[in-house]
Every structure is written in structure tokens, then in C-alpha cells.
Amino acid sequence: MNKFIPNYYKEFECIAKLCPDSCCQGWDVVVDENSENYYNSLKGDFADKIKEVTVTDEDGDRIFTLTDKRCPFWNKDKLCDIYINLGEEHLCDTCRNFPRITMDYECFTEYTLSLACPKAAELILGEDFIFPLSNYKIKNTEYHPYLMRLLLSARNRSKDIITERGIPFKKRLKNLLGFNVAIQDQVFNKKEEHFKGDDLSFIFDIHEGLDFINPEYAEIIKKAEGSTISSEYDDVFTRLAVYYIYRYYLNAVETKNVLSTIKRIFCAYIITGSIAASETEPDLIRIIQNYSKEVEHSYENAETLELLFESDERFSAFNLAGFI
Image (cartoon, rainbow, N blue to C red; front, side, top):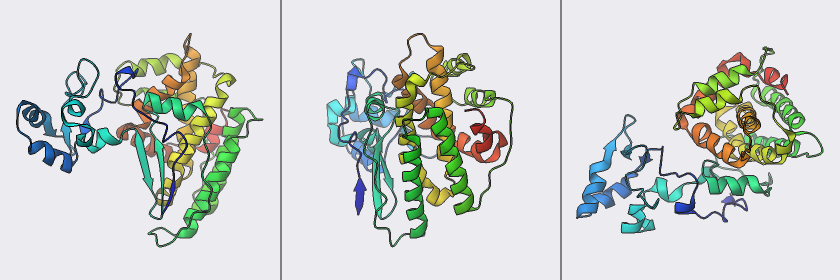
């Protein structure tokens, strides 16, 4: 099986208590069955604590209950008590794997890291990475091999469009929308509405209404509305766009929608670029990392946006392109 592992993937190493954020706060930790069976086999006070804080959530998943939005095993030294007491090999799958992401396309597999992790965000946004070629051997799949080959080719072309650095990023993003409107129409026979709205305030309004870990995040977005995004960030946004294209584009083999990836890029660019423009001393990588944690890496928020991309005419590619 073909595998693609970007250069930044192997460079990642958790910085533990030095992390400016933490994956141990704000998120429920889903405990896989094998890990829970192991924890249940243990005896003693620590084992009793694990059993005490492991409950079933409304989705039927087994999770650790949070205390003040913190994992109950994230101690005062910002270290993991399960790691300390039981060893790294006995972390549950969620904790052992994050921020590593595996994208399995049956006959080939690709890997990346989540931008929601500060260290991963530094690696992904700090330098360009080698993009995969489209010469994968595709056969014996549930999807049509021809469709995947076409998507791989279109993904490479999308990458080429967005990384053409002699052109301002805004213009490249507009070109990227146009190219994928054609792909959406020709490949999936899905035409975009020619809707034209008044401004981009709807993107800020929709984002402000999402469910955030940090209750102040909606106010941060509100404050940023109307700010002018600086072209000095074009290199970082180019890498952000490449991340999204690599991470999500091939999902269209199932969703039949390539434009959703480009609309994700558009939203991330508008919101994070505006936040950076509204701050006195912005740290764009941390701003993007926070957006990933609050929006991209939230299943509920990402699903809300995906539904709106298809159902809300204001997310028409023609409408979005008119504002850049």
C-alpha cells in the first residue's frame, strides 16, 4: 500500500508542560474499548479513580469527565498522570495518537497532523512541505478508481494554483474557487448558484453562533469583523491552504463535493486574517491554531459549516469570489 508522510509529520514531538495550550483541556477524551478493559483490570487507588471518572456520554462513547474543563489526569504540573503511572503504551488511543491524523483511502494512506496542536501548527505553517504526486496505484476499491485519479489530479492542480507566489494570495484563492467550480460542475454535475450578497458579515455572524470551548472566542471574532487582512501573511495562508487541500480534498470521493474544502479555506482565511488584523501584536500561527481547535477540530462546528456550505446560498463560490 502506498503511504505518504509529509516531512513535518516525523518531526513532531509533544512538548508536554511547555505547551502554550493543551489537548488536555476543553475536549472530552474518548476511551477506546481495549484501553478501558485494561484500566478495569487494574487494582488500587489510581485504578479506582480511572473507573470513577469514566462515564458514557450522550453519543454512547466512553469518556473521562472533565473537571473545570480539564482532563482529570492532567495534573498541576501540566503532565499526564496516566502516562506517569501506567506508561505511554497505556494511554488511550485518543491521547496516544493526537495530533496525528490518518487518512485511509483503501489502496493508499496519507498522514498529517492537526493544526489544533500548537507544536503541530508551528511545523505545518512554518515551512513548505513536499506535496504527493498523483501516480498512486488505485484498484480494488469501493469507489471508482477513475474518480480518485481525477481527484488526485485536481488536487495537485489546486495546490499549484494556491502556491503560485507571484500572485497575491487573495487572487490565488479566487482562482482556486473558479477552478473547483469547474471541477464540481464537470465531474459531479453540481452547479453553483450565481447568488450575490452584500458583504461578508454573514461569515462572522455564523461563526459567532458556533459552540466554542473558550466562551470569549465569539467576542474575539466579533471584534475582528471589518478588519483589513494584510498581505504580509500570504506565506502562512498559502501553507494553511495547502494543509486544507491535503487534509480534506479527497473526501470528495464520497461527498461528491470538492468546493467544501475551498470554502473551509475561505472561512479560515477570513476569520483568522481578520483576527490578526484586529490585534496589536498578532501571532498568526497561534490564531490559526485556536481557530482549528475551536472550529476545524470540533466535529459539531465543522459539520454545521459543511451543511451551510451546501444549503446557504451566501456560501456560493460566486458570492465568495466577489469579495476577494
